[in-house]
Length: 244
Image (cartoon, rainbow, N blue to C red):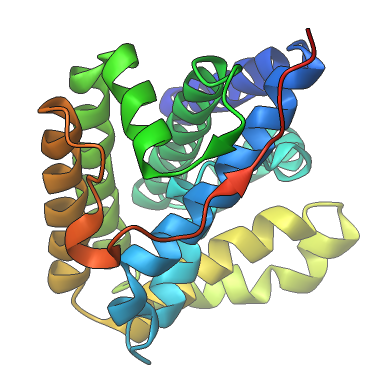
């Protein structure tokens, strides 16, 4: 439970940083997240087009790794934490904590990259790769990829416990009435996705391999780190010039 509480605080601290940032920083962050989601969609189009892996892509790549800001849901989580501790097993609480950490880490990285792109007029692969090169946090990025792999396996193991999955489904109506509907949906979507997928090995290995290869490409100065999977796409996301 301590791990979960720490990750709730971490999420809140990232949300506070974004809230207190300049209008330009928020504008660039929004554009970066738009481009990042398009980039993930293109990079993993083969997985998304698979009936087996589509739901896992929606949950894992969009919800956790895509840097999405979900302040409202995390506020619910903060209120629901004592209830979760009474009803949910430790392994699921651990998975929720790791999911929050991955989500906050991804959002924090995007916020930091946005700060390195304040003068950019558009976001594309070269702009993105150049910001990575200036950031130089290769260790932190590797930790992010490791967390993806570990969390995926943890969710894969958790979903094997049919009682836990049924419990989350049964909580839908009570959670909505108690004001925790977004949180319950988050948990159910994650478990449903991994239940549909079955063994997560290929899914996780594909993500880890492609993201690691792109990371190494950026580390070596390649302006098109995602070229093996998406060429020069997706289309640039225009921000416009910074106000002088």
